[in-house]
Length: 265
Image (cartoon, rainbow, N blue to C red):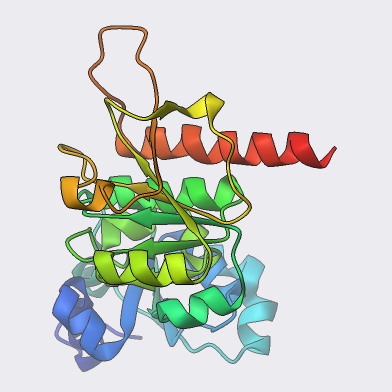
């Protein structure tokens, strides 16, 4: 039983709320039962799980798998759990997980057909939703470029609803280098743009496509749009200026999914 928030284990894991510590330790926190369930079932099991009495009861359904995978579980007091939690109403269970991303070269070895690239997507909730949407819409992988939110930020992890453990990721790949490497690997680069380019339902999506989504405020940078093979836009029929970046990614990815499914039947 871990009683104190000053316990060395709690102090060590609490530091994972800071990005530089996460990357130094190659660990992150996944909070709540849905995230913990996905972590327990992931290819690489968590370093450990920490929970209060309520969380321990929730873990009963996973007890056989936890034992089979030899995942340590530590019970902690409410005060100690409060030091780890990042939510207003914590569920009382946190998994300490190993980072999941791989280098871009390794990501491309699996020959993903549809790849989503997040370029300077700053809001953690938006990035998490994009990971979840990419997983749901059948994208094979995702690249998160620098100046984007951190995929392992607590809000991002929650927003993925477990998809962080499913979707192959490359992280902190410089945008020009990522563009060049993707083109070398045979990908067409399609950048979303609010004002110009083909209407998305008129696009003939190639077999290997990297969909580039830019910053929430200004979109894909001008110099990077110039490197793209095609610009794609979503027309606005109402008075809205543009869509949220995650909503736009959903429309475009599902259109790719729809077109490919239609062409295969």
